[in-house]
Image (cartoon, rainbow, N blue to C red; front, side):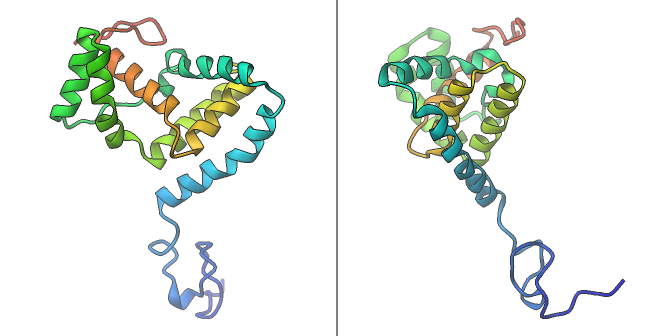
Length: 180
């Protein structure tokens, strides 16, 4: 088998010459790949939703917010390092304090809301849609929500649901109650 020449394109797909590219270290990062994956979902999701009215989109949005209750793959895991803001979020959920929850959510969301986490959630939604567990319109709106860094409805709901399950306040989608 002949070796690749210095002036041929690198095997990694970066489109750079082998002599200028290691193929691994200079390829796209995981974050860049996650962003590209999310961007690729937008057009087909928009085509699916174009036929719905504003009122129907509002109903679909309400269904989307409840998705983390459907399957644990749609819940965000809490950070392993327990910080004061994470403690504030957990205490707000435990005390059922909506005002404190709204105050603590943005800081914890900033810790977990990454392109990698959004791509993971998008893959989970696609899998549930393909299995017939999530309607295509709900999946489409969810994918649009995840693809836009300015929107955070699903990831916020996924974080709150994951925290509530971890505390034992809510049952898992399978019906188990987590003991704290």
